[in-house]
Length: 104
Image: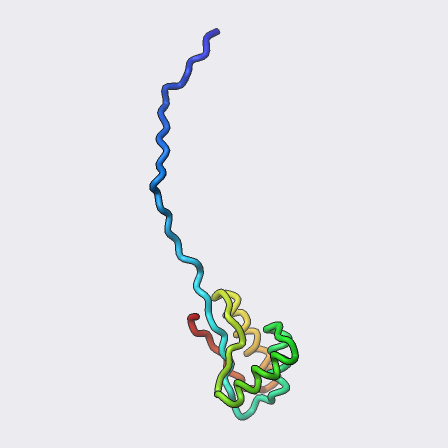
């Protein structure tokens, strides 16, 4: 039995350039207010944003003195989740803490 060889011709294209955008990252900003205790903000930064106690204290002081502070930079879904979780916890404790996102 004789095998037939395929006459198919395959071209290799070397000059294709595939472009794609990396997902955008977002800054999570915490805003100062006159009602949310600094200790609460520190605990939130430790629990939700995985800051060390020293980092949480410094960031809380930055928020207090500058009106807002950078809690972290994340991909959108993670940033949004951290904002929602933080505000839910703050509201559950009766605090009006405000966080928002800004494209990095």
